[in-house]
Length: 128
Figure 1 (tube, rainbow, N blue to C red):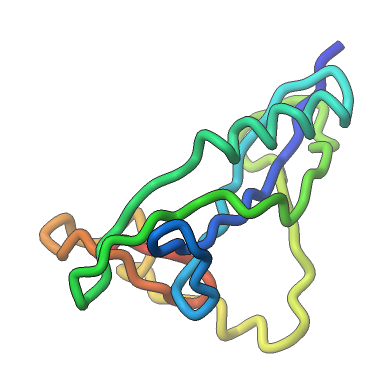
Figure 2: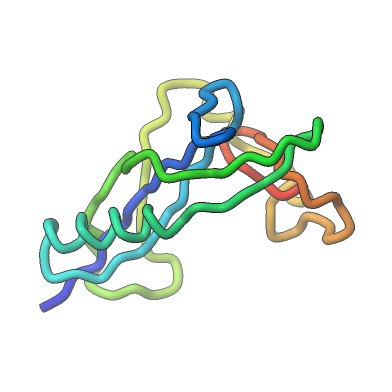
């Protein structure tokens, strides 16, 4: 019987094939259906390899966001995926109130007329 897993993929900015640790990176949260942890891991690694993307910074440099590895892989304990089910949690080391944003700052409510370059806010990459 298959189970559901949550994989947290880490991507970093590369310029001319070299990782630039000073530029932004992001986390991708992906659901994976697999029969066991090892299969989920293999699927997560494949998803990571297929996750490359590009963006341009304010100076016009084009960077590629490339897979660096996994930040986490955890089995979702819920018996069924349904409305409101917890699929992932993360302990925050401190200042959890700094993670809270206003409604209109939530990605789903951001205006479509903003520029296409990403911004890095509160630990998440958001389209700007």
